[in-house]
Image (cartoon, rainbow, N blue to C red; front, side, top):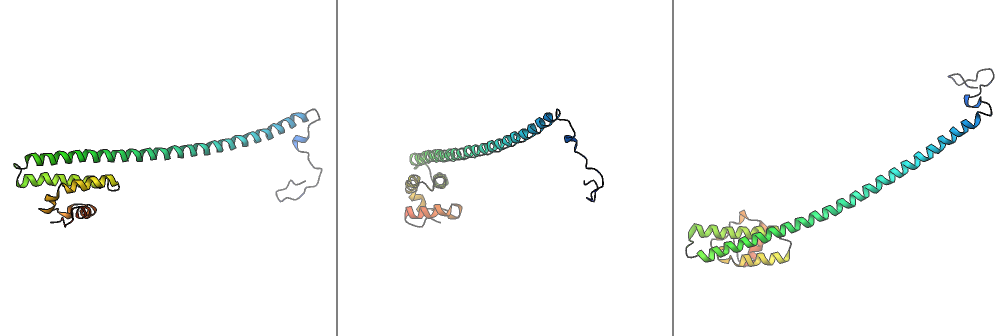
Length: 178
């Protein structure tokens, strides 16, 4: 029997562990407790496994819903950009109408600022919808409506997007910079 902290056997009879000292009539109680402890361990392992699986399932569901939410947000942003471009195009038409109606009265600086506002609106539509071919065609139309302004006095090109300046040169067919 090992009772020493060095692990040496002490002389004398071996002691019986406490759970084996009982009589035969007490034994079934101990066996029941041992079986219950084993069963509880198995049940706890199953519950832990189910909790882990449920956590994984919830994580996957959350990721799927987050992906769908991002897709919906992108769609909403695209619709918002389109709505802003339509609003700007309508504003462009109002400015062009006011220039056409009051052209004899508009002279000098007043005419310049009206035409400059139309060009700035055109650039804004270009910037919003640069990747859309339908809107590019609309911007071409808008630039063609302003060819007189693009010839004289022309654009202050360093204040506009370089891509817009290149697009305007392509559409008008000549240098549009001052």
